[in-house]
Length: 264
Image 1: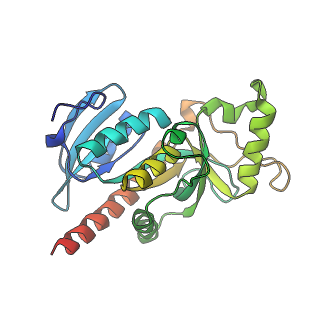
Image 2: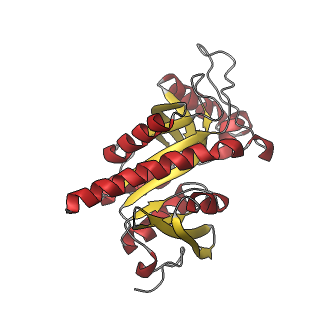
């Protein structure tokens, strides 16, 4: 098989398992937890390393930011044979119960974006694979990190969330956002909706662990719940990223061991 157009990977580069960070800079940080890791390819926003976990080949490929590039990356990996994915990402708090450095294991996401509608109608839910969700939950508990299991908001525009009043449709954005938060969404990011929809559409195991990058800043929890994500590099939770990586690695380890047991 020829190399994929965007990731520049072929079937000789992959196994069944992959981690999907958004940032290319996070790829080597994850790969360091694998045995015999090496850089495989870098093309566009997609940097790929590979290594071994419990004797199985595992990829770490950056998706880039947002739904469109995440969809391209995931579909190309799927065409090459990957069927088990864990996203290790970051998000911004939309709940007073979630603070900077906390982990959130997603059990669903609001589809406040457009890419996933190219797969299924908007009424269709965006949810992770139950086995992956369970292993992420168990890993977080085992490692002793502060974490929540809950719903996220997947949006297309980072700055629309921060300053919706500057947009022509700011009123609509603001009130939709508040309804999602009042409905129970506890964190927001830009990739999960399409990843979860691709997972269910193509029968992939897909899950996500997010490191919260902000403290909740809603001025009135009961009446006006909003979030102001840190728009500068100083707010990035570099000192907490290892938590999401360690949880993702442990969850993937258990998935691999479970698959091996089924084969014996």
